[in-house]
Length: 120
Image (cartoon, rainbow, N blue to C red; front, side, top):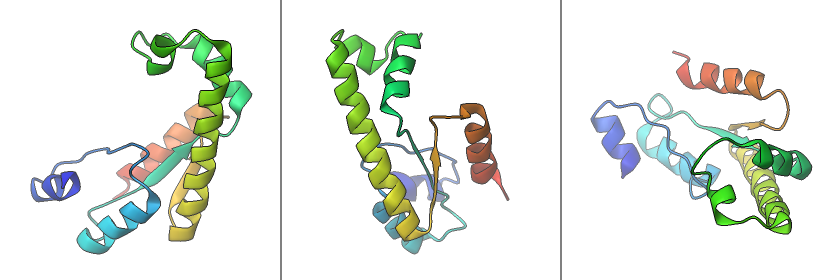
């Protein structure tokens, strides 16, 4: 529904979340066309780096930092993120979508994502 409203209103939106799987995006593109919808999937695989980055976070309302101080919970969250990332990467390939790993060379990966999403 969000996608349909954005297309009708000619708005540009970034919709994110683990519920927006490559399969769902494929269905949306089949309904509205690839000229109206662009999709890219971002993931993180490196659990150690993920935990190290959480400790560097300066985001005041970061859900991870706000939710726990237990080190082992950070690693459990990192494992979950890594597993979801692998799933999304595999599914993205199956449906012909781009998937970027954000663990290394973050700035370059962001530039790739922006370039992909803003191309005419």
